[in-house]
Image (cartoon, rainbow, N blue to C red; front, side, top):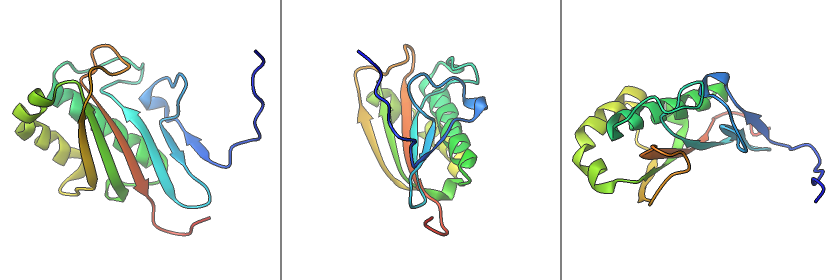
Length: 144
């Protein structure tokens, strides 16, 4: 099968090098014509794409830091987040560690609480990943 040839995307795909390789996805997309930013799922990966944390609270904090890094690469800041979806393979563990996870949350977002959902899943794409965060942000300013 031959590859499909599409016209250039009207969207800006952003892949900051400090978030590591992007096999088949972009870390963030700034959609046209507005200022909405769609942030790809982030796990607790370092610049090489490998997990840098083992337990759920540490993975959550690193993953949220990666969400903020991707958002900043688009010109946004944490208060521009309007939605954050949390996927975890361990909902009971998430509940049990909620105080520690809350400390990690506040380290990156303070008391800014966008619309959120927590979803339990059987597994994530990266073996060993316990949590993945997906965000949407709206950057103020002109829509073009």
